[in-house]
Length: 251
Image (cartoon, rainbow, N blue to C red; front, side, top):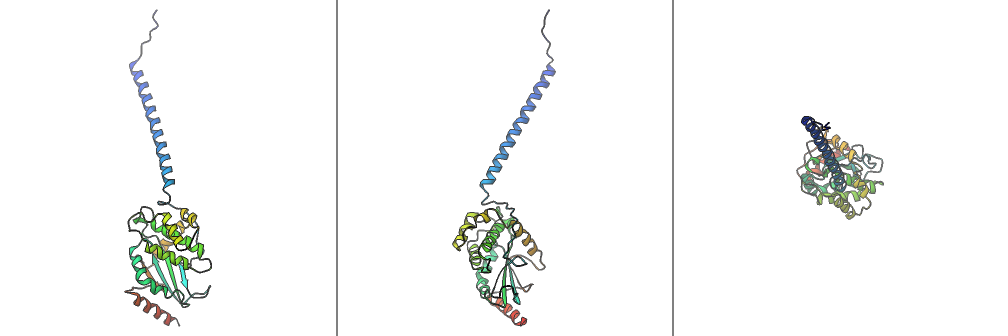
């Protein structure tokens, strides 16, 4: 008596289809795992120029409006005239402003009747593939926290000026973190690498930027206010005239 079995070709085809499907799914899982591992390792290696940040530190050396204040007024006092300069380290017009108005502003840094408040924002983050506006603002805040605890922001101002002097082209990647750290060293400030790498003030900069950009009258950077009022400036002489008039009016 024969023991040969009759094989159903349709059942065999179903089994073959199931095996092919299982193999395809397993292949996709392996590919997905490889892609994830590659992306993670690439992200770790490129953090110095494309940091997404996330640091939640709050600076201790700024004013209530998030500014670095330079003034000759005694500590704990408020001078009658406050010049507020809102700027972005990637903004070409801000660089031009510093070149033309910087010396005039510097003349008030030691004046007991005047404060110059520098508010640095990240308005142009979208113009950089590596969030350069935030990274530069964070590095500047690292310098301020490192050197300005006693109210002396001389090193911060030197770094501020170096960032504008070495401003990268708008729309590019911006300076890498290594260059931001080197410029700080050029200004005489060491040991900010951890603060820069970790983007310590990332969240604070974003929140303070949004606050500054939502103020009435804000139209972009650079923006100058005298005692809260937006002013239009033609040249350094017009800045000095308006500031001096505000000082006289406050007497």
